[in-house]
Image 1 (cartoon, rainbow, N blue to C red):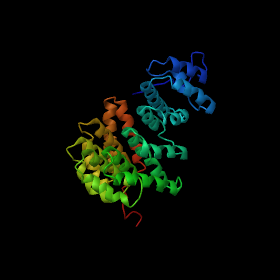
Image 2: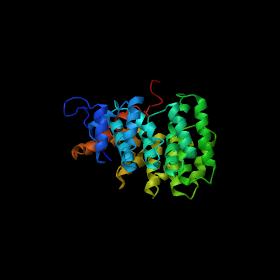
Image 3: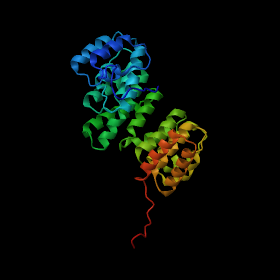
Image 4: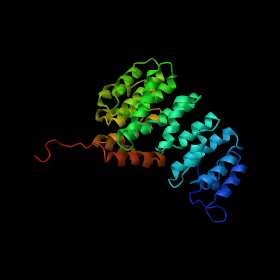
Length: 328
């Protein structure tokens, strides 16, 4: 879904759409890409407006409610001035599982205590596996925030405990367990290394992919050899996660293989390799990216050029090839 909106926020009258216009537009909405009235009129709603919004919201079919939240998510990502926290929090308790999951995605930047309480409940008690899994994934940012000292350590410990219990419970669905592992990997909890190794040694293909993802998120150099080997794995899903992990871990010895993967048949792997080279940095990575940028310019591939330029910008702050004898 690619949501394109009028970034000026103007209606036909030249004024920014207001809440009343948004309500009328929602009642008439046919399920396609919403117009500016909905995108702008439902941003920054107060409690009074949210209550009125909720009355109309209930009249919208569940599939359309979920679709609207996904459109709002994309709009919020493209325009930082838009704030859909109010409808997102409301939709967390929607009777339709697809809507609850879409609400979790809409609130992807929120790190409030209120949302944390809701996510913990959804992770442990929601009847839909898809919602529990999405909530467990969303808890990962709280784990990381606690690790970085951005939120109280007590909240981080509570989240780790819930996720750890899910991981250790082999009766839980594999999808939920792997999402719990991916979130746990953002912490330095003692359970993490053993959990990652168990997942990697599993016969479950998706669990192995999550293990590679977790290796990268753990920032633990002990996983370098496994990640390097997985870069050449026959399975595209495992290869993709290994590429991402190599960037997260900034493995300089992975750069030559990442250069080869810039020609991989899988477009997602090629994109991940570009990003990983930017995260890793160093003269060789920069050289590879500069060469790719020149090719993108020659072929007038604006999308590729934009991705490479972003990676080059990141690479300038990455690993530096420093001569240890410099200055002696």
